[in-house]
Structures are given as structure tokens and as C-alpha cells.
Length: 105
Image (cartoon, rainbow, N blue to C red; front, side, top):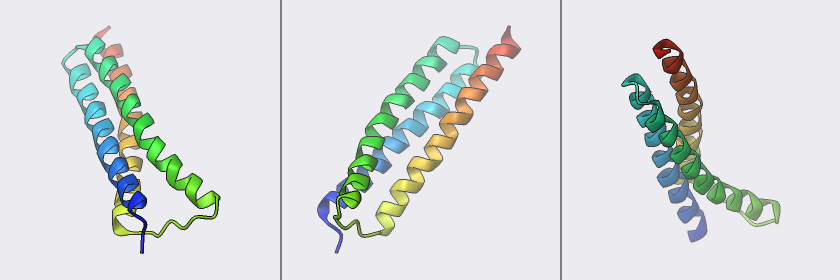
């Protein structure tokens, strides 16, 4: 059976990954509207959320490296998927903001 810490870590991945994704999507919308300062601020907020999410991920990886068991659960897989998807969206958001800035120049 998975330890409670694993469930907490999975929820941390979901929560902070989702928040990062939301900030990245806001950055795209703000850049599209021509508000590049707000878009850059949203990208910075996304980065902060990723730092939080990666802390949970690091704890899980450290636990496993030290010989602890990390039982895979649907919740943990969902959390990792959430984080990975958010990272892709954030990477694309950076590109979109740059493109909108070029178009606006």
C-alpha cells in the first residue's frame, strides 16, 4: 500500500502543476491582448509553481533512491502527467509570448 506521503506528493504535483499550467495559459492570453508585461509576470508565476511542484517530485525521487518504496498509483501517475503537460504548455507559452511580441513590434 502506498504511504500517505506519496498521496500528498501526488496531490502537490497536481495542485502546483495545474497552477503553473493556468499561469502559462494566462500568459498566452495576455500576450495575445498585447499586455506583454503581464504575460512575463504570468510566466514568472508559472515558474514559481513549477519550483513548488518539483519539490514534491524531488521528494518522491529521493525516497526511491534511498531505498524507500514508491508504489505507483493512478493518483501519482496523474500527478506526473499533470506536471509534464504543464511543462510543455509553459514552454510553448514562452514561445507564444515571444511571437506575439514580435508581431506587435
